View 1 (cartoon, rainbow, N blue to C red):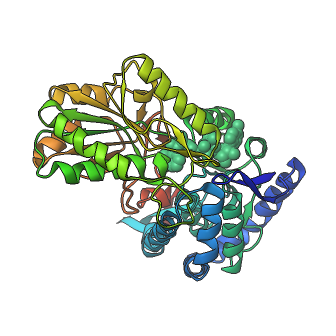
View 2 (cartoon, protein in one colour; view 1 turned 45 degrees about the horizontal axis):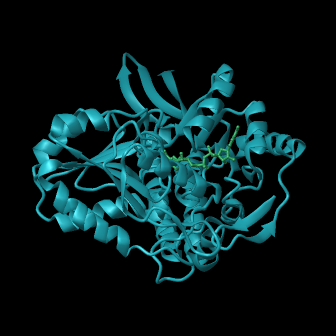
Length: 454
Ligand code: NAD
């Protein structure tokens, strides 16, 4: 498998993909090792994860360099991602013990009733490339703490990062067979689906997620799906500072080149503030410069998958053909690599792909709306339900609007944000189940009811 640098188009390294036989052997070893890992106890498992947390800091320079090399994000964003991952790990270190320890819930007539949690067994973590540390730690950290063994398939676009994660977990005291990386693309993922694993946890596109869920449904094991989004944001006519709002919205659209599941993908603006918002938004968009992701003077890096450039062009072409105008950007840029100008489209409507299908790139459609009812109708008008955001100084109005929008996350005066203390749970085609929060710890366990007389 060739590991390419998307910012230069050059080869970084070649790495052997795991063969079907190797993947089966990894599973058998994980199956044999999981029992001892469970018996090692919660305190021991937590202490290993603490070491992993510390090693991420110790190796920061290598990890952020390789992340930027293989996915093309600016080096400062790679550093932010590592900080975010360590922050999430601290949440799991702080909350896992209280969440997983058996809880006496009732004593009656000499009978003690206790709620316990057992690990699932050996689980698959099939992961994405856009935030490989963040989306990875959401799954493998609570899974390992709960006593599971993990077969971890990093995305083929984030293999170096996946191998670093495996190496550092082993250095932290996690036995080699309890956490194993499975290297490769779709076919390696398919091999995992054939094995009798005890849970499947997937981060990626709706199309792949649905096909995985269908293929493993007959096993009746837990399945978690963190899928894509077409996240809407509504700017009401009660805004204290439109320039500041335009700045925040542009960051929500263009951070990580829009390659975030919770990136803002559609913007609706109340007619009364539309013209002024558009003026500020154009300035913000034009101020972002794509370029060498290792050079801190550029805010935008390269897209990770070169094929995405043509996909964005298709969405823009479709929108323009149907009447949209380009407010800023609109085309690929640079002499090498997968660079694309941050792009804003206006005069868009819901017949256009750009307002319906996940773009997963630095392009955004902005639409004028007459009132809150129209905004609510349009915000609900896609197959996705990951996040939704409303900007307004009137908090009651913002909360009331969001209560009518079907999304797992509701943002008031903020966007493109994840907290480990809150569940991350897509609705509709955006996913199934939840990661993060205490729900995202329990997701890797089976509940057990203990009835104890004596
Ligand atoms: P993808 O679906 O192409 O791939 C995801 C993973 O699945 C990769 O490891 C890939 O190798 C593997 N895979 C592909 N085909 C497979 C198959 N047939 N069987 C088994 N495994 C298979 O997605 P991607 O391009 O890596 O990620 C981008 C998508 O992920 C976007 O839609 C984004 O919104 C979504 N995402 C969602 C969240 C969330 O938390 N909801 C977070 C990050 C990314």
